[in-house]
Amino acid sequence: MTDLDAVLDTAQPTFLQQQAAALLLYQSVLETEAGTAFLKLLQTLTSPQLNAVQVLQAYGHWFKTLANLNQSWQFYLVDQILKAENPFTQQAQKIALIEMPPPLVEAARQDLRLLWELYRCGGEEVAEWVQKAAELTNAPVVPQFPVKGVASGAGERQDDRTPDLITKFAQTGDWADLIEPLAAYYQQCGTGIFAAYRAFRWQDGQICGIAYPDTIRLYELVGYEAQKEALLKNTQALLKGYPALHVLLYGSRGSGKSSLVKSLLHQYGQQGLRLIEVPKADLRELPAIVDRLRQTSLKFIIFVDDLSFEEDDDAYKALKVVLEGNLTAKPQNVVVYATSNRRHLIREFFADRPRPSDADEVHAWDTVQEKLSFSDRFGLTLTFNPADQETYLEIVRHLAQGMAIESQDLQYRALQWATRHNGRSGRSARQFVDFLKAELAAEH
View 1: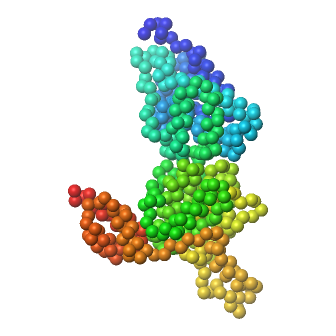
View 2 (view 1 turned 180 degrees about the horizontal axis):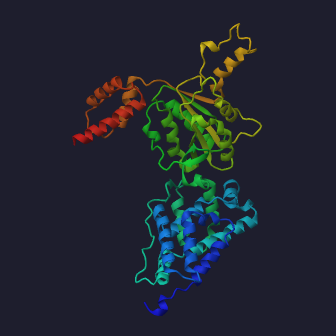
View 3 (view 1 turned 180 degrees about the vertical axis):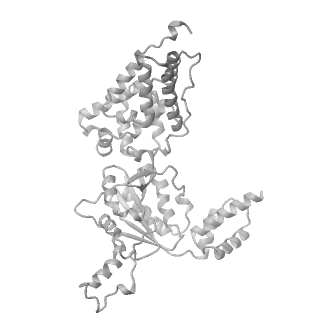
């Protein structure tokens, strides 16, 4: 390396600082830990009092943030663009590009051009700057991490078109030309956390993404064909923008009610379906959750598992508002799917029935009817009766396909399992097959 080559030219880092500062809408791309680490690195590289130690520390922090994400700098930028939440991405979910305010569209185009300048500055070039600034013999390791699939952090991309879109970002010299496919992506896949995940849970007052949702698939579920068909038709109506009903899945434990709801995520996730699990304890916050979801173009199933209420539990009032509505218009993109082992969701006791001595309650029978009729507020009720022996064995045979065991032995052991454990149900069948797989694997 010659003396001339060893001198860092700060013109390019300074130029990138200016590009980052000029962003009008997509500032969030550089507001993450990796983004701020990159800006800090540029700041140390362009400082009048260049400090080699500070440069190396800044580079190390930037490298580590990308390593935590398992992303290269270029992939990180595109990933953040696809997840960005700003006025342009929010409007793109709801209206066509041609209907947006021209200044908003032009600002988005400008930001894409600015971000392209950051994109074409690869990790190799940054490593060379650090080498010169710190007067190193060799350039530091480049944060060029291989990305498997099209993942963002812990979440998963939703749409089959995403790899093609990322390829276009890599091959297009003027990112402003990608405004139309990008807007179409936002409309199909949403933005922010809804673009990064398909499954969510309501926790501590916020929607949290589930990185590894249940992998159950519809084809794995045996039996209850009529119930499946009804639920699929209702979900398809939701996805097409038609009126869809709230659904109560009622029946015996272990019959596959919850698994059926969860399987919808894998069946329709690429069509814009999202699943949000809300614990019964948080049902009071349901109206606020729905208000947030109505703002997006995606379709949501609010999933409440094992639903029932105690006599003095007023959380059902919040659920009642969502099921029946109030002065606020009912959102067309949100439905509630709840499972329960009880047909009547509010517990009733014989003591609740009106007696002559009940002087405090003028219309006591109305109170009883209110409790009994609450489940009727679900537009669709699907009943899951206990599995008979043949259905149970059919589930076992389906789950045990490909296993090295004779059919008669499988049937005998499955029935023995049901007798000794939790009876005949889909859950029991899966537990038995899981146990059997482990046992057979240990023998070989």
